[in-house]
Image 1 (cartoon, rainbow, N blue to C red):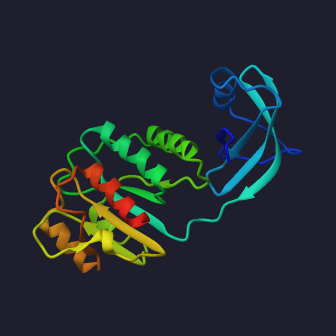
Image 2: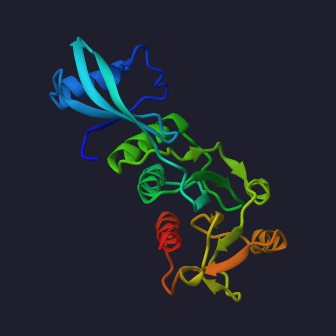
Image 3: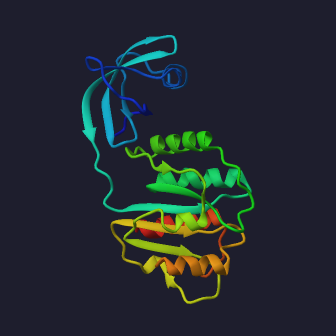
Length: 232
C-alpha cells in the first residue's frame, strides 16, 4: 500500500462518503497539496483500512469516497509491555513512537518503587502513537493504558508468556532465545531498575527473569531491544 494513510477513529460511511476531520483535511490540502481525484487510504486503528479518493475540498474539510474496504486480522503474536515512566519525557515519547513502529499491542506505563516521575500526558502520547501507526502503515493502534502500580500490572494481563527484564545478579534466561507465541507480557524497570522485592513479587506471579545481553541499557533502549527480540 503506497497511498498516503490517514487516521479517523470513526469511519462510518454515508453513501460511501466520509468527511474527514479538519486537522486531516488541513494536512491533505496545505501540507501534502493533494487535490480532488487523488487516492488516499484511511484507517480507524482497529483493523480496517479504506482505500479510495478525495472527492472534494472546501476550506479545511475534505470528503473521501471509499472504493475498497480491507480487514487486517490482529497479529497472531501480541505483546503487552509494562515500562516505567521516565524522568525525561522526551525519551519516553521516543520509546512510544518506536514501540508502535515495531508492532507492540499494548503499553502500560508502570509506577514502580524507583520511578522518579509520575507525570503523564496521555493525549500527546496518543497523537505520537497515531503518527507512528500511519508512518509504519499498520492497521491496529496499540492500547495505551493509564499509569498503573507495579503490583497491579503483575496480574493485569492474562498472558501465555510473562517476562521481567532486570539487572540484578540472579539467574536469568536470554530473552533472545525464547520461543514465544500468543500473548506475551514483558516488564521493563525504571532508571534505577526494579527493587529486589519487586523482582521477587514478579517471580511469585510466574514471571520469567530474562537478560537482554551483557550491556546495561537505558530503560527506553531496553524496551525497544526486547520488542525486537520478541518479534524475531
